[in-house]
Image (cartoon, rainbow, N blue to C red; front, side, top):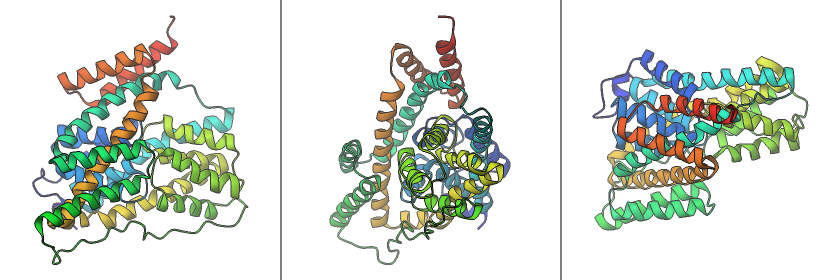
Amino acid sequence: MTAHEAQPAGAAPPTSLRELAWLFGRLGVTAFGGPAAHTAMMEDEVVRRRGWMTHDQFLDLLGATNLIPGPNSTEMAIHIGHARAGWAGLVVAGVCFILPAVSIVMALAWAYVRFGALPEVAGVLYGVKPVIIAVVVQALWGLGRSALKTWLHRIVAAAALAASLAGVNELVVLVAAGFAVGARCSLAARRTDRAAGWLPWPLLGAATTGATAATTFGLGPLFLVFLKVGSVLFGSGYVLLAFLRSDLVDRLHWLTESQLLDAVAVGQITPGPVFSTATFIGYVLGGPGAAAVATLGIFLPAFVFVAISGPLVPRIRRSVLAGAVLDGVNVASLALMAAVTIQLGRAAIIDVPTAVLAAIGAVVLIRYKPNSAWLVLGGAIAGSALAYGPW
């Protein structure tokens, strides 16, 4: 498939691989805050600043991403790369988003192994987190105006938000929302679209490698453990923690509880995908080679799933019924993003200084519309000054 064929209808001309590499490499360094924040920063760059795609096209990719296992923000990068520059873009965008995080985590892992502790970054995060909330809220506002087209979409979004905050499984929320909007469309139109059909998503049919029964550490078993996690995991970093604890602590006894918590903390505090936790674990267990193997194992399924599902998105959109289902999934995806933002907000805005930083970030975004990376940098500087200053 050529870059022209992969390009969404109505979007800008195909993007060069160099521009994709620069954008996603920079996002890999500055995208703090987890998948919701990463998605917001991508929306700012791809929709608002560059006009590579419309809000609706971005939402379709976001809905598709939420329906497959793996790291959501990394899969969004891969989807965007494929849409803008074909198969080469798929690889370049994904790799360039992953590599900066992996490099940072590798350096932290080296320091951890050598000195037995993680560097102090609390001050940086103190200032970055509230600014990230403002970035995500801006993205939700823009995407919501495109997604919430009718009263039905608004009702489904509210129900999905309530269900997510109540702890309902993310995949259940997505499927239920898609079914609700699709059923309403079917009843209203009284027609089916059997010619185009609804092509089932390759969700749970992905090959999942059974966990090895061996307890002796090796690169092969390590790769299989992380390949399994990357193939079946839906949800947040806390779900990742549960998967890794089951395999690496309880069953294989390769890590202690303390080491695992340190590994997950590194994934949370560094920019880029949270799945870079795998890099840290691999390094702790077997040095740079094991870090590379673990990283490859956990991220490889994301490239495969996007390569399979990405070309189906335009075909699904052409079917009236399938398009309605995708609209429901998109609405639920935004609701999940909003629920995460509410949870992040409670953890990020903890006192008057952080509230002020969040408010300033929101005003600057709305009034001046700067690149969100500058806001992240400003938040990091302000947080460090507040945390480590003479006062």
